Length: 151
Image (cartoon, rainbow, N blue to C red; front, top):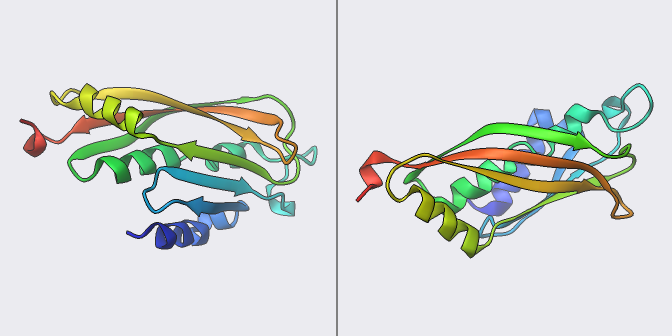
């Protein structure tokens, strides 16, 4: 699927649309994604800052999806675990970026070449408009080469 169609589809996906989550950029090679969470009356918590569930949701699928798109159909790729550490109240528009490089993809391929499962932790920050870190997110992704693709 073309990255632009993928981005538009995610922006219309009800859990993102109604949470105020907006995918602003996906590069054609799926190696960079930028996501924004815009402050809306329906995604504020009791004290007027971003709802923590929305902060986590804005990061939820992207490591899995970018790895899946880059490794291809010969691999099982699943989210396995996640955690978030809230560092300061999130206000206004906050962003998160996801970057894959060839060295990491080579590492993932090498770790799964024998057909064993591999669990990799990815991490990234959610930052506010001033560049201050609002939250740190870690996601563990399960990766395994499918039986028919093993040598």
